[in-house]
Length: 265
Image (tube, rainbow, N blue to C red):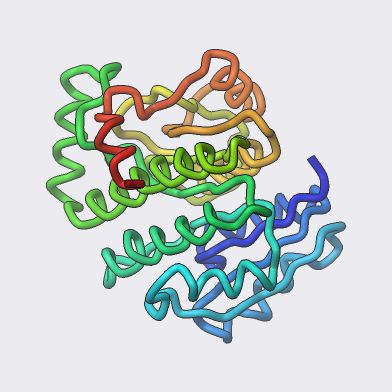
């Protein structure tokens, strides 16, 4: 779908850069939010010889104190889609939870935004997925034990997106696409072009370029919403997305939905 106007928070990240390149190839407009102004030139180079247009804004997300700080950017850019691709090992709760939630709140309050894509990961769950086997559950528990703060911050952001998108739909009467794309361990290298999307094992690997391709494919459609777990697999990217839509796959299955929706109260 040509004509999307996308605002990417965490624009210097590897997935964000790869997504931006694919969006620009589709003639989309991209605004990349980065922390370090020294990264600007390399981000702008992504738009060279591409039909889309790219712009860069500098902002330290640790300075986002409330949704109003985000709303000022949203009113300037007027995006149709927002992507949260940021993350921090040093300031996990400040970025992965607090900044994410404030950006979600401002985005769901903005009537011109129809889609929000959060980059999370499969272990961000409060309950073991019902399609997992014993080894998957062990891997999930080990991941949470190894990265407890990241797992907790990400799940709180995911849950908040679910709640605020439901509140937005209830108040506006129009659909809002809240997408949590949840890739497992990332690999570098060229795209494989084949993935497993949806109800995946708890642990796996996937190339960064393939994560980006799936993310852009999800945003390019008007019928994608929910949690999508992602690992390498045998399905062509577009086919994988088609199958998830056709089968109404949502990896939030098994979670406490009342708990999720309560975040919006």
